[in-house]
Amino acid sequence: MNLDIFSSWTYAQAQAQDDEVLERARERGRELGVESVGAATAGFLTVLAALSGARNIVEIGTGVGVSGTSLLRGAGKHAALTTIDIDVEHLAAAREGFHDAGVDLSRIRAISGRAQTVLPRLTDNAYDLVFIDADKSHLLEYVAQAIRLVKVGGMIIMHDAFDQHRVSKPAVRQPSTVATRNASRQLRDDERFLTTLVPTGLGLQLAVRTT
Image (tube, rainbow, N blue to C red; front, side, top):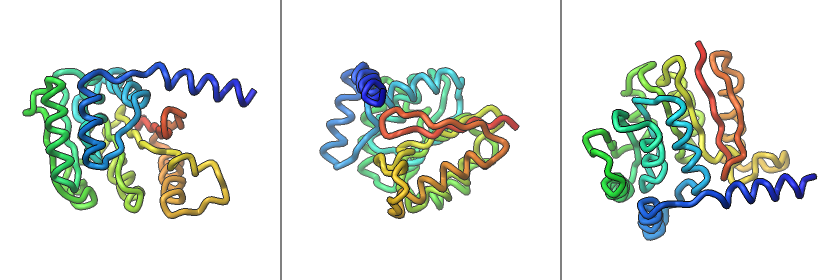
């Protein structure tokens, strides 16, 4: 049975294919040493953004724009993205990716800085979707800020919810693994949210605010 599950998971991941825009973005990422969300995760983000009807999105960790492009493709032409990254080269590469994807750059607010400094300046309960794909050392703080930022009906998505597939191994106590477990628990224990863990790519923790 376990082999059947693994076979099905592998088959599902293999169905996802990048288009030329995302392939070029990934090439820029390889040049900069940036690992982007996988093709299956990118496709899932597009679907989630479309289902959520998100109009105002926050992305913590821009990378080279693969996830931001995927979210905007689902959210549609009226959505706006605030994306935060400490590395200006990453932001420049992401802008190239957004341009390649035909995104009007006036819809993008790209902020260079530490997320733990930038996020507190954003407005409470003003965002439909918050995507977290950043350093694990500040993950609990990012989740706390996401909870503050997202409006009722909005969604929080935490990427790499398996911490490189270490979370399921109780003996692993690496700081990043502990932080990931605690961040997932923080969302699960908040009675205002419905949550689920999705085994796509490196794992996505989803949380929808109901009240």
